[in-house]
Length: 306
Image 1 (spheres, helix red, strand yellow):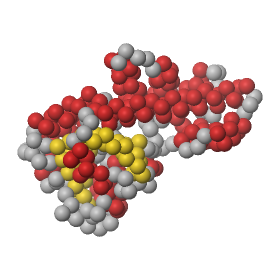
Image 2 (cartoon, helix red, strand yellow):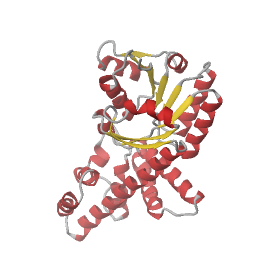
Image 3 (tube, rainbow, N blue to C red):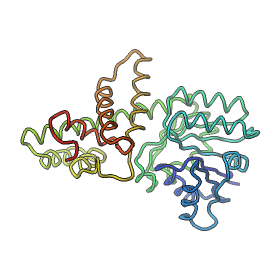
Image 4 (cartoon, one colour):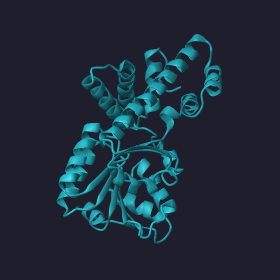
């Protein structure tokens, strides 16, 4: 019989992932959902098919009624606080917790120890992809932890929440978030390169359209998508962020910490993080990672908004 599932955290990613689990997860019972802002949980519940979800009154309520609990939260602090609440809520022995958050590998490994000390199982499962990919069930899931636990989570990954899995079964839990943090630096570096390229193209006379034609021809997927976002001004016009500047800087900080700890250097990330600081200064919490383009433009004597 399928386990009773619960989901904690209904941000831009969590909402889409929840929806796909309800639609394709072959659940035997309604998905139990919880969010710190209760209104968001009720809004999602109302959008899902009748009888397919239920809103928990608290974290303790969600955990006590579930066998497998997914979490998708914004940062290390939120994850640690939630896990502390979980461990104080009552016995969690025999339950399986799955963290889809992007956090420092040390945080992930500490969570593994905490859950183990309390008799629970744990799988790290961060995901790659923007909110639109979560809505479409096209994420890439990275899983790490004991093989027998990962096996229980896999039915909800490829074909449900995602299009592919990167399976690190029987590897330390932190390997999944280490991959996620390093992977996110490649995305950050890509946006930085496109921002610089488009700025030089504009100032040198090549023109943004000509550069975009090259990007579209030479590269595919995210390169072309981000290039289009920069050209169309989506980097500052968007109401709902795809990758908020605060979260992007959190990931950059983790990456730079990992580099220092391993005796290496990530110069490109340092440059990009400096531009993210410029986005924060110009746009505050409304800034998106693509706003790097605006920061590079300002540096080059152009206006932030194209």
